[in-house]
Amino acid sequence: MGDLLEEHDLGQWRRTHYSSEISPSIGDEIVVMGWVASVRDHGNILFIILKDMHGEIQITAKKGECDDSLFELAKEVKEHSSIGIRGKVRPQEKAPNGAEIVPAEIRAFSIAKKAAPFMTQGKTSTVGIDTRLDLRAVDLRRNYLGSVFRIRQTVLNSVREFLDRQEFIEVNTPKMIATATEGGAALFPIFYYDREAFLAQSPQLYKEQLTMAFENVFEIGPIFRAEPSRTNRHLSEAISIDIERAFADYGDVMSILERMIVSIVETVKERNADDLKFLELELPAVELPFPKYSYSDLIDKLQEAGEHIQWGDDVTPQVMKSLQDDRLGGFYFIIDWPTSTKPFYVKPGSADGGRVCESFDLMFGPLEMSSGSTRINRKDQLVERMSKQGLKPDAFDYHLRVFDYGVPPHAGFGLGLERLMMALIKVENIRDTTLYPRDIDRLAP
Ligand code: AMO
Image (cartoon, rainbow, N blue to C red):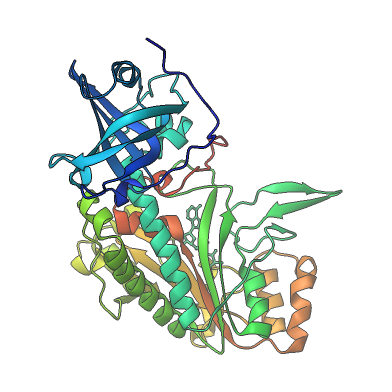
């Protein structure tokens, strides 16, 4: 009786069907490939559940029914191994797709050398996230995360489709840059030949410049923030959906943002019905227009609720939790923030000496999803705001010089993809919405 030998090469083997294509009516011999999700050995009968990118298929090896030597080989198959099976399909009511495969040949491309330190079946995992992240590629085989990342794919597709319909052009801006834009967030310095440079915190100034040429632009790309804190909502590298629109103000882009969120929710409902069913998930209710609260009104409400918060303070998730208001459970905007709390490029309002600026945050419950604003399009005002925030206008010469050539009134926003996923999927930890999270403690894998 032979051992199950590893044959790393594909050779002449080719998959003929994905799991999702298997039905009891297939008469011919087929070849399936994937990973062993589980093995159940009942002595004279063995069930192997094989998982591929579309789902699962049952392989049933029965003593007497398949060749003796093949039956012995099948018994050696271990969870997580990568294998191919040639065999015949027959109906089996209890199996996925109502069919099972009776094997005629097994090919072990890679035999698992160890048992994984956590279960990959089932919806929840009992081990801590760090154990899972240390072996993330194996963790990502969990059906739960499969659904999360398929939904993420739909979110990205639907954003692109939506913005394409609104005549936005997709751009890619430099990620190695010379200056900071988002005051509060710390920068990652890098060596750039013989100079110091930084990883981009945001495509902000580039997307603003591009409105001069293309009017409406968007970018889906990484942003880098040296976040010193350990929280469930901050990453050091996140994906931001950024838009910028010429001849528009913050009201116009808020309208784009809320319609985009509605379009995302509807598209996920339509394209990911199976994933939502598996996750037992109902997507958040979205109704246009989203409620809008002014920052000042919210501070009054928080003070009434007993919070020690002053006008000018940031509104943190902890503080927001003290507000008992049903309308603050879903998506809503906080608008008209103090100018002092926002970056230099945000346009101050015309009333009250510009104490309040034309800005908004989109929230989901206590969590910030997006920030946006009308931007300053006057060079002298921008220089003044930079200086007020302690920045050296000379360092921004590369940006300021384009203001001599007709920068249009413009507005935009940045929406955090992982934060949006947290809201849609009700994930507690942002790390589960990204493949390989980066944070203060983690730079690998
Ligand atoms: P802001 O700094 O508010 O605005 O960032 C926009 C959105 O990006 C997401 N985000 C993060 N997500 C995870 N981890 C982080 N460390 C992190 N930092 C930010 C959030 C946030 O709402 N230039 C402006 C946008 C604009 O005005 O167009 C900006 O970067 O969801």
